[in-house]
Amino acid sequence: MTKGFIFDLDGTVYLGDEIIDGAAEAIGELKKRGDKVVFLTNKSISTRMDYVKKLGALGIPVSIDEVINSNYITAKYLEHHLNPGEKVIVIGEEPLIKELEEQGIPFTSDPKEAKFVVVGWDRQFNYEKLDLAYQAWLNGAKIIATNPDRTCPMPNGQIPDCGGMIGAIEGTTGVKVDYITGKPSSFLATYVLNETIKLPGSQCYMVGDRLETDIRMGNENGINSVLVLTGITTKEMLAETEYKPTHVFDSIKGLVTI
Ligand SMILES: [Mg+2]
Image (cartoon, rainbow, N blue to C red; front, side, top):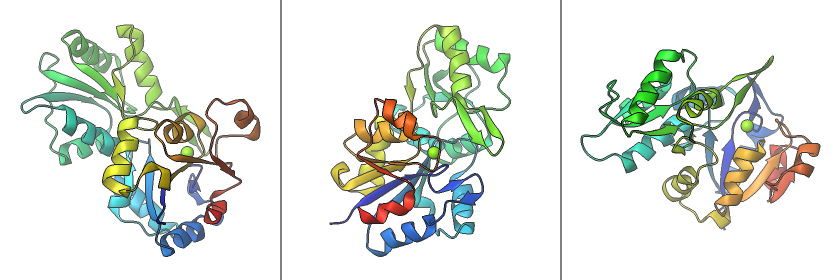
């Protein structure tokens, strides 16, 4: 029976710029036996092509169709939810803007014209952008964010991620943003199963190192969940979590036993 493997990247396949021991061999073996593979990242400040290049350089050849990031899934979400003539305000960095542009999403900078405000990780986020989002929201725009991650792991610690921008907006509006498109969203899970892997969730495995995104998305969407202990999650965190994975492996290497 063909299986589908949905891989998180950082902490699962590599750590920063270093491949996790045995990752290339394990992924190669799964592909050789005919299983389907897709890579999924919440990080919105790189393009999908950046990941194709990075994985290739680490000895994991992939095509762009096998990489989905939160920018791409946000474009797909907007494609499904925008009516002709409706426009979006984008608060985010160049890779997000470029991806939405490539998928034909119409932009505006007028808060009276926006149907959606899209918020991604933005290292130039400021008061003016916050006010723009707020004015659009007051005019009835829905606010969607690329990913819920509060921080992003870096070689020397962690830095603020999209969660910081979401917090500023929610602190201003007093309510939660309308939707978050990246992991663990059901829109993303459904898209990957139906459009990319094209297998039922019961034949698929969501493999990742983060309980509240990777494992949660698997559990809430009928996909087997696999925790690898090469990233952010410790055995202590696993013991306490409400998001219990279906399988736990010390590293991605263990996957070939599934
Ligand atoms: Mg990860």
